[in-house]
Length: 130
Image (cartoon, rainbow, N blue to C red; front, side, top):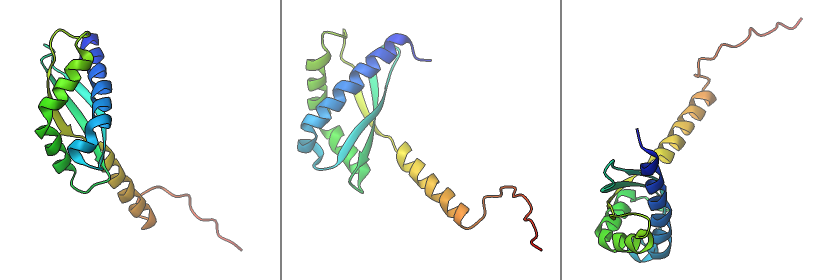
């Protein structure tokens, strides 16, 4: 269970990393669209897991690896932005968040099942016409 302070620091990091990636992202990973979806901060505030969604490219993991290569640059920019709000700048780790991709995949699967009439819903008996 996250404390209130962990949630506050997580949201602060999420907002600022989003701004950093928007401003400097084209230098790091090109024309891909990267969105910061969530940040989880450790109880001692020394580590932050940053979850990102990647769009406009097929090689999503490659984009995360490019971000990881520039982690010191991103952490320095983050430190410059949040140094007055936290005592220690946490180590940041980027992870691919594929929740939306999975949601779209499941929706298409359900649409396909419904189109094939395999959803297993109980239907009212059809009324016979006379």
